[in-house]
Structure formats: structure tokens, C-alpha cells
Amino acid sequence: MTLRRLLQRLGPDPRGAVIVEFAILAPLIFAMLFGVLQAGIQMWCYNSLRSIAADTARYTMVEYQKQNQVTTDQIASKAVAIGVNSPYDFNIDAFLPVVDSPASDIPGMTKFTLTMTYTPPSILDFTGIRAPTLSISRPIYVST
Image (cartoon, rainbow, N blue to C red; front, side, top):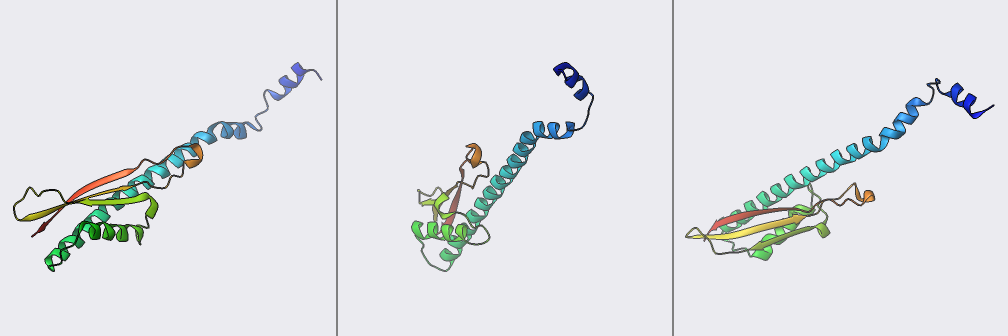
């Protein structure tokens, strides 16, 4: 059988076309799937950072209302305790809260600035794509 005759015989045969089409499209389909999953993880982690900041600010305000003067280290430790426990379960090595106490722009108030950074897990590590680091900053005002 010559090569020309073999190609003529296989040319109109549709069997196997689906598997070839899938092999061509599969990398694109999986890339889109993993990309959507990574975007969802990023959004969940960003919203979690916002919730942790709100919970930490609430803790600070309540402690000041109870006449307990908390330090910047205590506020940062509380943010870590909230972030690494349920429901957030952040990786402690990728989560960094920093609290500083700049001069307050409101008389009679103490201002703290809570800045948190977190690098979420990446499901695209096998491709060499790392998840971007998220950062959020929030002022906390308490009455002195």
C-alpha cells in the first residue's frame, strides 16, 4: 500500500477527530479553569484580610472602652491570632500584620494604622506563576 493510497483511505474517516480536537483544546480549557480558581482564591483572601482588619479594630476599640491600653504589638498579635485560626486559616509564614501609631489628626483620639500583607497559596505554581501579594491598610481611632 502506497502512502498516497493510505492517506486517501484515512482522509474521510471521522473516527478519532474528537480526541484530536480535545487534545488541542484541553490545555486552554484547563488554563482557564485554574485561572478562575486562582482568581476566586485571591478574592476570598482579600475579603478575609478586610474582615480580619475589622475584627482587629473592633478588639482594639473594645479594649480601650474597658480602659485597657493595648500596645501596637498586642494589636498585631491579635490580628495574627484572628488570621491563622478558623474561619480564615491563613498560613502564618505568609501573613504579616504591622501596627504603627502615627500622630493623630483628630484631637483627643489615638490613631493606630494596621497594615496587613498576605501571599495566598497558588494553584498555578507548577507553571511558575506565583500568586500576587495582597495588602490592606486600615486606620483605627480610639478615645484617649
